[in-house]
Amino acid sequence: MKIMFHIGLLLCLAATVAAQELPSQKTTRVLRVYDWRDSSAQFPNSQIISLDGISVLKVENTNDAPFEVLLLTITNSSLAQKVNTIEWEMKYENVCRSTNENLFIGYYFGARRELYETFPPQAVGGDNPTNYTSSYFVGTKNWDKYEFQITPAPYDNETRPNKLRLKLSLPSSGTIYLRPIKLLGVVGGSDSWWSPQQSGLIGGIGGSIIGCFGGLIGWLVSKGKARKFVLAATAIFIVLGILLTIAGLAAAILKQPYSVWYALLLPGVILVLVFSLNLHSIQRRYDELEIRRMTSIDVMGS
Image: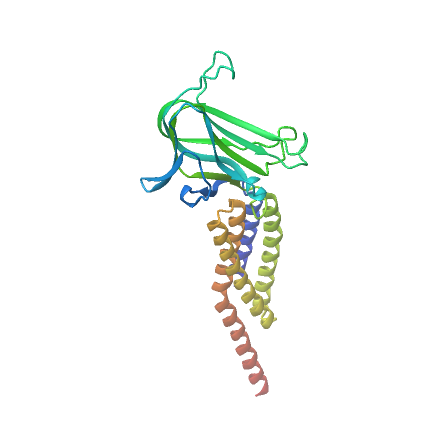
């Protein structure tokens, strides 16, 4: 019995050390997908078609007059501040260059994809400053992946944008096809249930408490004392282990970082295994001691 609880104590201490050494991992996940067939927006010179079972926005300009299409506007500040990357797949055909030499003499630009990031009023640099990013493309190209990286405010390098706009500008004729737009964000920062440092603190305190209780229960069982307390504590630790295991699995399913689900799953599994496997032995030990006590009383009485 003592050996089993010593093993349990060592496992709890190992969980504590492991929790303190959890790496600070960050993983990228898809926060939201904007499917064109679900969009209620109206796009000029455009239609939504299906290619290979995927909804595609087809933008076509059949004349030389320039026009713009506002593809996406995100005004949900809580979502906008979590986005690190806007990603989409696009192909284009016969996109002509601009012949407007008033832009820059000697240069001829093609179609333009543009991203506008608007920041909250408290950002350094004035009320609602805006970052602008763009890139040009011309000619014909098959499906390829494109993206815009979301950057912090230009003056304080910390404030995230609270509004995002993605725009497409065609200076002349051409046809563009766009698959659904994805918003990507990093898990492990503000999305994480707790930081790796907090995980180490939780693991250190929790592992020490569990280890001490395991040692205490092992000693009480060996002495045959405090039966009700020991059985109640054992049952509580089994239930706690089940809850921690469920929470760890849920954290893994929700794609929480390693420092979250591992710190829940490992101690949960340890608690369930150590205490449930020893529950029968604990009861049997107390029963044996009770039988011995009653036998001793009978012998003394006779």
